[in-house]
Image: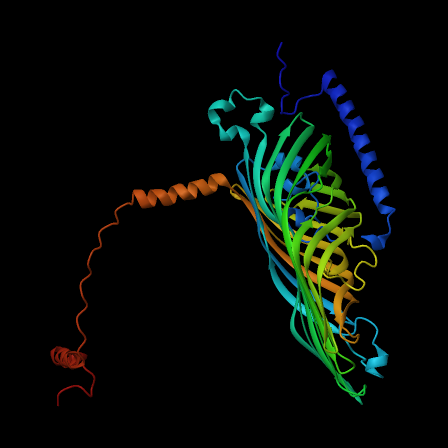
Length: 560
């Protein structure tokens, strides 16, 4: 006895469908209740205990909708937020988000004095203004996803397939899913208030990126239920450089010179998986996804730190070590719900990132300290790790259709930091966390749809606040301190999707031109224009006047 596969088209409800809808409502209520428990449980953690997991846009559409996509994801973000929503992507659709441009302004009021001044050595040094302002323009990495119907991959066998399998979506995605950077290069600072003078030179460069690639599969189990899964291999890359030199005189018996340098690097390769589901009942849809913690495969890293000072005693210190490095992605639970109609859609999502050891490094090298000419050189074996705390973030988005082909998108989102309170204090040899920043963002955009694809243009404005690492040159030896900062960022989004059929037609047209060029029509030569000669032209004018009848001439031209 064979079971008839469920039909995908919408039909009037009968008794069987009524029972099915009742089961769906019951399951949906349980999902909503579970999501509420997760959200409340996460919200009970301290607000100050919150790293930035929304540091890179993945899909242009989802970004303009406030980072939502748990229920109505239709772009590259579907593979990473909730794979089950990939069934909403048009078959043979190439989704892309190729252009993200950001303008960022950072204001740190105590950047050059990010901690107390050592009065025993620097005396009555008075620095009233130690502000840093930085304006940056960046082009962010993009994402690329290719989706197609499973039935289109093998047309001969498609007729024999179960409709659920034939209409399933298979995709391959490449995306930078995390990207944070801050560059403050070749900057100087001067403070002069009699009798003290202080000069500084600083260079800072800190970045973290995570690039992921892998397949996505999604299918409709029933008219109401969809399931999806994706597996991604990712490469995380961490870089940090802090360098500062300072000379201070006038407030101490002799001039004090200091130098501080700290650099670290880490590259880690890992695997993770995401499963998701959506349930539709009426006009409302509920979505849920769960991402596994990353499984480490391989990683290497290293760290160097050097400091020096003179003028108030003297000391030089050098640490250099290399070894293994592990960067981990935390498990993530996401829940979303939305309502869709002929007017557009509204979606509300919440995500919870679980606590985890964010990174670990086991390094071996040497530590050399020179004090008043005496050298202490010893091996160094370091085991470094830092923890990330649980974070709850909320995103809301809406799309309103102005016409069948034009819609307006808007959204709001939060991006709280997972850096534990106090974790930045004093820095570390690795400085894995360069800042603790909480952000809120609002977005607005316009979408234009056609038979060939979709184009989206918009912007996102975000405001951030928190703490950031900086070098304190007024301690001997210099140390890493923290300073408060405010960040304002405007990101421009140009994204969309295009049909693989349209690309195929364009390729075929180019191939036809190259393989079967049409002959051009013959060129008919034109008669050359007579060469212009002023003397000949004057002779022609005199001849015309001589031959002209006398009655047509003017009085001055008639013969006497």
